[in-house]
Amino acid sequence: MVEGKSLGNKLFRVFNYTFLILLAVACLIPLIHILAVSLSSNVAASAGIVKLWPKEFTFKSYEFVLSKGEFLLSLWVTVKRVVLGTILSMFLSILIAYPLSKNGRELKFRTGYAWYFVFTILFSGGLIPWYMTIRSTGLLDSIWALIIPGAVPVFNVILLLNFYRGLPKELEEAAFVDGAGHWKTLWRIYVPLSMPSIATIGLFTVVGHWNAWFDGLILMNSQDNYPLSSYLQTVIVQASLTNMSAEQLANLATVSDRTVKSAQIFVGALPILAFYPFLQKYFVKGMVLGGVKE
Amino acid sequence: MKKQLPLHLMLIPGIILVFIYSYIPMVGSIMAFQKYIPSKGLFDSKWVGFKNFHYLFNMPDFYQVLWNTVFIAVMKIIFGLIVPIAIAILLNEIGKSFVKRWIQTLIYLPHFLSWVILGGVLIDILSPSNGLVNQFLGWFSIKPIFFLGDNNWFPFTIILSDIWKEFGFSTIVYLAALTTINPSLYEAAVIDGASRWKQTWNITLPGIMPVIILMATLSLGNVLNAGFDQIFNLYSPLVYESGDILDTLIYRIGLIDAQYGVATALGLFKSLISFALVSISYWLAYKIADYRIF
Image (tube, rainbow over all chains, first blue to last red):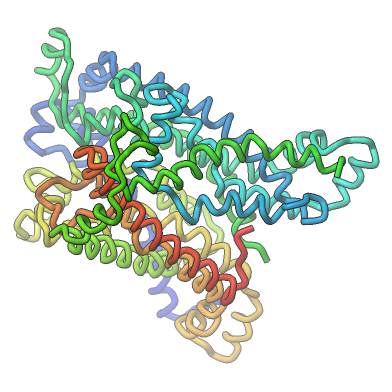
């Protein structure tokens, strides 16, 4: 927008900057507060005097959290889940999007295949039949229950196939002339050229697996198999500090429920807080490329 | 046809997985018409016709829950459209600066954190005893508000916190749309003496109108999705009256009370209405905005 030099315009600029900066700060303040509480002493946190800076600074609650076996165990489950789940989902997305990006002459029944996948985002069997199906395929209580049922992310497939379609047809023709088949063309030409889009959906998949908690909660019978988010859900939201050793109970005297919860919240959010700003430029690019088609 | 074979083969793993974990649960919906007993399975459980539906529609809470769902979802849709558009327009005024990038990074952030994490954060900062928000309100002599435990406040807390989480991320698509507006339109308007407000009204808004209409149409499919993750992590029996939604009710009836038939009936009811709404919204998006999913 073109601007004049009038007083009104200057006032507007001042107002606009202030407003937007405040808004951005409002997105960050709750997290800073949680960080401050987690680094404060039991007494200060319980008295409710901690605002945005720790009072009586201490790492006690982090020591407590990290000394808990369940916490580390669930962190390990999450790491496995994120790695295996992302590899499988990305592999399947790349593989499914390629044939679907062709037209009806290059792939017979293309429309039928596409609707087969898209229909699953329009209609679903609902929670109970979904749960029963997973149960009867014998995945309950295994890490695969968190990976396999959701392994085909149809939305990502659509994003990716739209990206593939934007690639020049001549590249594929040239590859065929040089004797490459579909398999080679996909991995040597399409995948390297689709990196912005693949990085974007890769980031979304990683974040999705890291954050997923409900499936862990209902598909895992034993708490030892809970991924971190499900474990955090039980201790932060359902609020139960069970199964503690005598040593941990002794430690509990130096920390409070509030500081421990805050520490766990912060550890749960930490990987995303740490990595996402660096990946942001990729996902904005990938989203726009996938979303705006003109 | 021989050349097409690899393309068909590439689709097979995805087709099989989607068949097992999406299509079999759809068939499993027939347990809505059974007195389903897991040990007997789908084939040997007793058929009861529409009894589960009858039970459901005569439940005293059912209409309250349906109303809660629609109210919360519709409010989220309306404000989830308006706020990001306004913020995108204001952000666009800043131009391409360092400040803009930082504001964007911060407002996108909450989108990437799960409702488990943000639930923990909100429970802490909204606490009536020593939560940050109530301490702040205390400076203006406002009595502590029990945001998450009061039926008058709970729906608004839900709507507002959802906007807070998602507005930043939703601005991406409008910011992308804004970049497609031809700058010479603004120059011409300034020469004609158009104020900043007039420029916004006559150039900016019409310029992004197609995207606004598209997003509005697509959001129609979400009228029964009030946000399970958020509500599950923030509600308590205190606020069932105003906060219980179809999805949380399905969870309680099905997985807690083990009334599989009734819960599946409720799930099927929701799936069918959602299917109709999503189909209509995609059809409208195609008619009005020439949008195709694939």
